[in-house]
Image 1 (cartoon, helix red, strand yellow):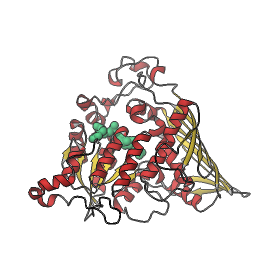
Image 2 (tube, rainbow, N blue to C red):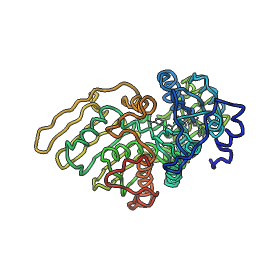
Image 3 (tube, protein in one colour):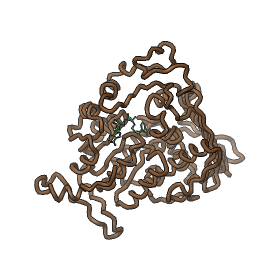
Image 4 (tube, protein in one colour):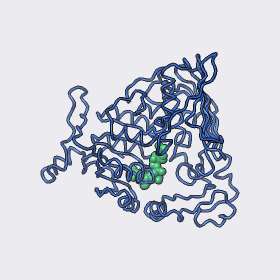
Length: 457
Ligand SMILES: NC(=O)c1ccc[n+]([C@@H]2O[C@H](COP(=O)([O-])OP(=O)(O)OC[C@H]3O[C@@H](n4cnc5c(N)ncnc54)[C@H](O)[C@@H]3O)[C@@H](O)[C@H]2O)c1
């Protein structure tokens, strides 16, 4: 999206008299920073969503309207696909204006926070458009998919007064907050190494490979789309930036490796033989959201997982060196019978370890803390209800209920954190391709720090 010639200010100048109070004043230059100043929110937060796929219509759509009405008002919904937008309008039930063009929504509606739930490769355009229009932006992970787009967001975030928030919901589950608290308290001293190994189930990986996530120019490969969560968790836990990544990856199961292929699942002649067969039409919600609107933009939700243009990987292994000298040994193995992870922090004063899934009991709330020279102690954390181990509602509370509240565990994330997690994935992607370590410094104007600065960008 290029910078608008028809800006919010211009729109207000030309239409302000007719529209009267429906628009707020245009950007005013802040005396302190010389940047266009942030608009002041009055009353309930006015939020708008761009991107009405499953994420946009549910967590940030119907859920916000039905459960957060005391704190916010949904004032605009946008998607480039008019059919999906019409379905989303009814499903979300906000009764607010809808748009197929983001600039038009930003220019005609008074918005405090724009929620970006579009395709990953479109995030930077939407984030920058929001900032240009004097709006705070809440962007789904990953912030974007490559270093150039990261730099565009960094430049815009520095230029404009408004803020960018990245939705790292993996920081919010209480059992992960407990780890952060223990590490911040020095329970195991300085961290020397981290072992972190994540498995994705067959069904989960299938859903990735059936759509854009399987194509690197759209999803940035799982090194970015999925692993942005994992690299961010470690950046956050260590409170340090990655400096160098050495990685391997492979595509062993999907794409051209498959024994047969077709256009899409629902009319595949190999359905009986295929372990990944899935009928989108059996799910009313997904049928109405996606299948019935394919003719508008060609977005197919149940592509063949063996199509030749899949170039995302299904196994990943990386060694990441951090600016504070910690080493991360990381892997993501996709398409397994197991779904979950195992993580261990080895510190100068002890060890902290936990796992989720793949165990006969539910165990993500349990951590084993072994102070140096002492017996292990089990630390149990009370679970919290909601998606992503209870992290989603806690993230939403921070973003929309108490955005200015204290953040002692630094769970809120901005452009800088979003970029650093993307760059770790981009470096891994490049390293695996080139067969040598790749440095983070020089990829963007952000320099890695041994202790991360508190600035959002
Ligand atoms: N944090 C998490 O745990 C989590 C979980 C699921 C999805 N996500 C993220 O949420 C985002 C959305 O995921 P999804 O599964 O709903 O995707 P999706 O592909 O189902 O939907 C994306 C929607 O964005 C629309 N769109 C794309 N570019 C646009 C633009 N420039 N302007 C307007 N509309 C545009 C598309 O038409 C589509 O309807 C992704 O970035 C994904 O990574 C995060």
